Image (cartoon, rainbow, N blue to C red; front, side, top):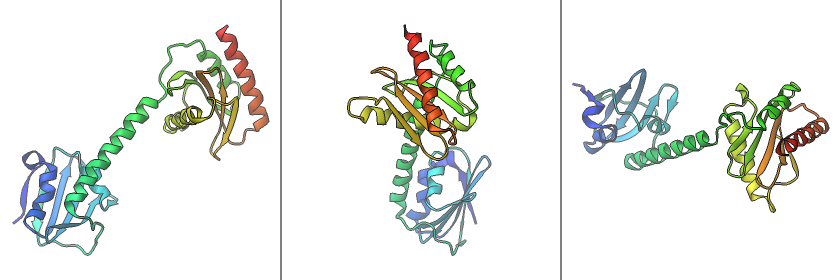
Amino acid sequence: MALKGTLSDLGLVTLLQFPNSSRRSGLMSIVVDDKKADLYYLDGNLVHARLGDLTGQQVLVEMVDWKDGAFTFETGITTDEVTIEKDLHRLIMWALKERDEIRKAQSETERNAPQPTDGHVYEKTLRDFVASSPSNLWASVMDSNGGIVACSDVPDNLSEIAPVIVKSVIEFVNSYPGGAPGRVIVEDGERTLGLMSLDRKLVLLTVVKPDTKIGLMCIAMGRLMESLCKKEQ
């Protein structure tokens, strides 16, 4: 006879350890909204986990925050698949730690995400720069903490990578001897980045298409820098 209940009755961590404490073999199925996880135990050891196309210990990372849902545990159901070999208690601790690391990374990405700049004096100049050529994708002025002082609109194809670019640029600038160098060009195959020091505290970042000629890019950046400097006067 299958054991049935809800996560609100036991809690996920307690439920995961239930077959382990009684050395049971069987299938634990947990359903939360439209998600279903199948966990196979052999003599109390969790040996296989599946959640959609995901298998193995990463399934627990996806599940660890589940609080509402229903479960069933059916004894005697086994599997030949073995995707987990780690001790269950250590596995749970690892999943909790991974969950915390993911949250930390997401929080950092949100902090670094380009924010609306409320009409900063540089904003129109940056937008005009991007609009001046189809090769120009994005332009921004950042401070040494990674804050966006002003920027053009972020295109959809850069929305996810833009915070990562900003973080990487600021880490480079802050670690470079003497502060931001006069000019740096970075090519990664998918886009080309241009960095210029606007002053001791601000950095100009431009992102252009990968097939843009470096010479033309440098000329355009120089003109943009001149326009920004005039805004300060």
